[in-house]
Image 1 (spheres, rainbow, N blue to C red):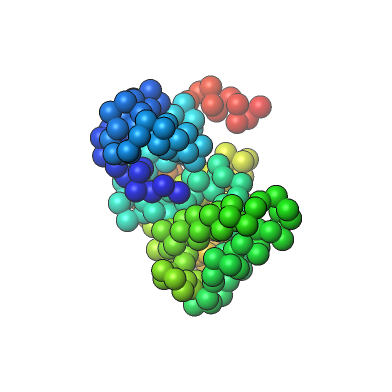
Image 2 (cartoon, rainbow, N blue to C red):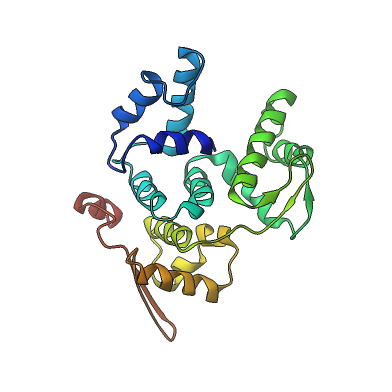
Length: 235
């Protein structure tokens, strides 16, 4: 998920940086220290594909804001936004979440899984590269551990990660208790009680509005969306 590049890029700019400024930093000023212009351009295209890097794209805007709130949440936060934009990572999520704690998982197993789901689509070399990148992303996010011999672990789930998961569900139309049972919250692997507690902590920090009484749950996201975006969401 190019996390190291994102960290470097964000160090140079504030949360209101524009798409053009990020592009200029990568392609003109070479803040990521790439060896050739071609590699700068390629890096930029990959970053845009994964993150958008445009505050007009609502999930990037909120991701960029949450990024600054909790440094320890960043690796998983990066995985969350890339999952929303990269179909191959979403596909691999099925395999990763099916693993039991401490279960060993190899690159070859990921290659086999991709080939089974996308038969004949990729060459052996491409399969190897894709599997390495996917396993690397899940390792950075805290779902796998180890270098050559990886095994399933549990990520550190922070209130910021729960906020982003709830917001992604909200963008898909979920409200109330349904927000806690979406593909985005399932990724976190938390018990319902733990999700509610983390949401409560986030509310106390002013990251969202959260009310929970008996079976009634209300979650709102003040000032997350522009009026125009709110209109699109409720069309």
